[in-house]
Length: 212
Image (cartoon, rainbow, N blue to C red; front, side, top):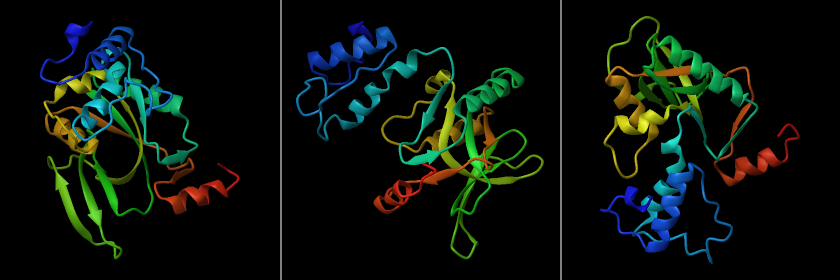
């Protein structure tokens, strides 16, 4: 109930009621019109908290769940990703806490994987030279470079494994966990179509292509 709402966060009574309802039911609350609904509180003072409590149902799940960037399109079979992650979790005795859909394609930003899983990243220039990189440990076995699709499967327990607050990259969290021995596994989806629509130009391009 409302007692589960952190006291350190300044919320209105309406916000507390909405959050408590989501925590209790494990389901999201849908806001039809953010201009008129009092449950939505825009503004810089609480924007990070609004984003956080909108995801409150994720904390109550017992099964892995899928995260999908809103600015990508794909024909990747999502059910298959979840099942592949479940198999990796069982094989790792519960140490696998996330699985990332990745592809072998040209990209300036690459994730690095070895036999245990994610271990770092590389940023490359247009000439292919490495401009920046980061590793949390030395690689074991073959080192593979893959591009992240923005689609991943997570265990609910991942939220309890870090004390991070505020805004941060999910890859930063994954690398923090990898450094502590948790498994972040790649799922190769190179065979499936994928498109980044994160700019107006790319979105318009997607609209003109019949396959989407």
